[in-house]
Image 1 (cartoon, rainbow, N blue to C red):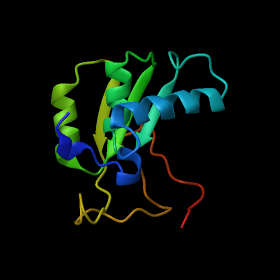
Image 2: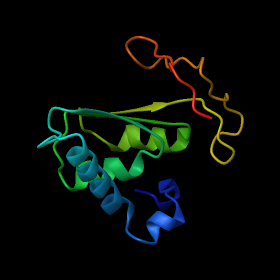
Image 3: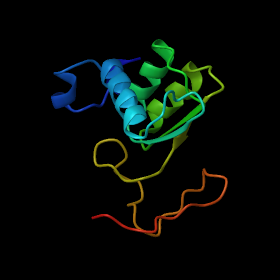
Length: 127
């Protein structure tokens, strides 16, 4: 994975590499929701797709499917061309981010996510 796509906080990367933090987070999530395995799970990830992708692929973590969503189009294009695993998909969300997509649309409670089978809207808006 090119280093330019590793956008984790320095606070996280100073503790462990992205792949390690991804594996740790997946294991913690699995325990928190009481699953023995993620093999039948469908994971939807908003934000940096790198750490979970690396952890799942490099450590052969069983998962039903993984969809990563990010506003950094260059990274999503790279992952779409580099990852050849039918369980994986990556989606570009044209959301505003000052560093990676400054001309994107601001998200709101009314934002519709058209990449889903049916448009999803947030029932609650967190500020």
